[in-house]
Image 1 (cartoon, rainbow, N blue to C red):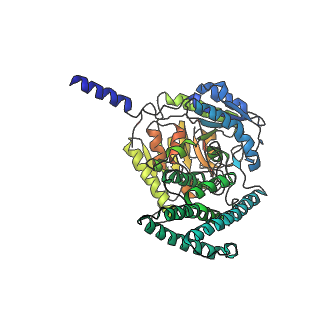
Image 2 (tube, rainbow, N blue to C red):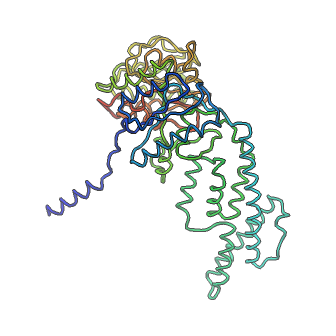
Image 3 (cartoon, rainbow, N blue to C red):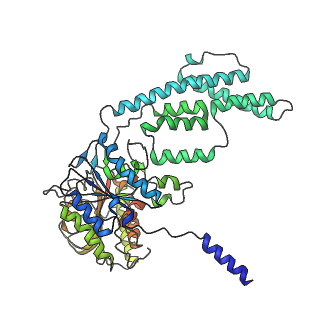
Length: 496
């Protein structure tokens, strides 16, 4: 009996899920810009502070400016991806840190980029129509129908006719399967139906394809390969519908994004650049079947930045110093007293919920629920609030290691402009150790839920994990500024 129990206990120990390995300096790929003064200095300072191996330092040559052209992004991605892939091969979970001087924003589609997409769609659509004509002709022959000039049919009529004949063929096939001696008919109808409408037994890969589409979208360079997968599942008619669905899509629609957010996807392969994509690392997807592979393609990206190289280097110094004993001070939540069903009222309610969660964690909390901004904020350790566009309120005395953010449209712009009053720049300049914000209008639903973001930090998670577990979108406009490994509450973690 004891021996059996011992075996059970050993097996349980072997089979139990192992806790994820904590991130460390060997997981961080530090990227600096050869063209930006101070960039390598910040990179080397971070590497020394966090014990990052020299092999993890990557140099890129991009404009020493806040913005870069999309056409330059592939050249930037290539050397970073090489190091990221090497770390993955070692079983590590790489994180990328962009040092001071790497551009913040990648511009929208270049002239001609939209044309390339539309030409690819038109060519694919034309080829798919020819293939569908052939597949439906075979279906008509299998049914014993008279031949038709399918190419002469307008698209809508062709689709309607083809679906009707496919439905009829499926009915005939079901009847033939029940008949003795109808094997030839069954084989002929089944083969014709497969060519027109797709095969069976492919549901697992079809689900994976659906997740790819959800989280990586439809990149121009991946259209042909994706169309082949669609045809394998849904036949020639399915592929034609796929191409028809892309007619009218404008890949230049809202594709200006943060370099950081674009890299998080680009380092894992091609992705759609039009508009924003859902973030598979978001906590709400934890129970989504098949979420593992989409998550494995994402490489979290943060930046060590600020008004000057000295401020950028201080961010990691503060993080390392504060981690030993843990962050202390007051949490300030600045809501606006909004009620109702609007998105603005919803975000405001989220701020009040965040205050309640922080109070439950026994932190000193100040909730200001007035329309006006906070009047004063001494000993500020955590902060979330809104709304003053590009107008930092100099009412904070930041504790060393403080983390916070202000929800407004452009607060991560102008980090290096001495005169700028944007919140990210001024918070870092005034003593905060980490913040986040948008490089262009992100819309309100792009910000992390403040309660969820702070809950991740309070649980002892590193800054980069808290951000990527709560940021709703990638290939979008939000950036995280601070030491990605910073764990402000690692010394005394708590769940809320």
